Length: 324
Image 1 (cartoon, rainbow, N blue to C red):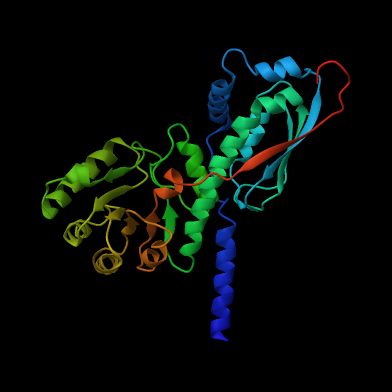
Image 2 (cartoon, one colour):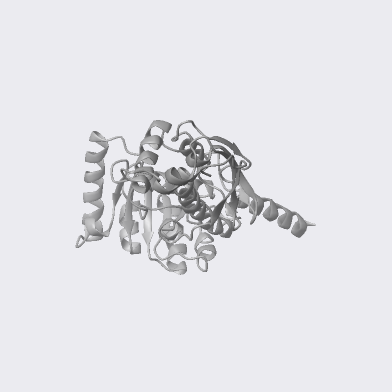
């Protein structure tokens, strides 16, 4: 009976993980997104616009198109589809059949888009590229999230993102069931190995205490974190006064060392969060999560995510002579 309850609970958690996470999802404001999308479209249109469509298709020609998933995955990017549809005049009408964070199946019609055929063709590639990229990140993140079900660990992203797409890719991570790390160098204190190279553990801890104090006085920090790669460094930091450090990043530690790190944290500073990092893969994530760390940061979910393939199937209105 107890085993049956455990299996049922695990099945429920897996189901939740497979749906991703939409409750914490945050995109930049629409005004910011519109400027970004305008840049993306300009890359495709240049100064002349869509020379092929303008030469072949009447401005009055109407059509309905369906964005179809060619591969199963976790959806991310619906707001971008809606905003891209508004970048053409007159705006295209979009009907969403799925929401960000939901699983889509191969062959599923995810969006229906209606309006000017020229307008549809103008935004088609930019729309599919963004949708495929973000859904790929969400899907890969979800693969990791499923592996930590039943542990306290959560999957975190890194700054290893595509230039210009960081905010969007971090949003996709959340859609896939992960949680976002700092947005950049500006919103959190994170001292890494290159910051403290050559310092003795005790000297490092004192310097970190001084630096965090200075950073907090002049900045509104999301958190203060320090990277360590030895247990001696970890212990020195854990012995600092309460509240100095919010979290410690455990870099490239094996599973046995991670367990020792968690035990040391529980003994000296239970309120400090621990995050494992460094070369984490789908083959190693479960064992790492079971050590008791609070987070596992995975650079691969953004820098190595495979694109989810989406296609646009267009159903054009009947031709009325002349141009298409």
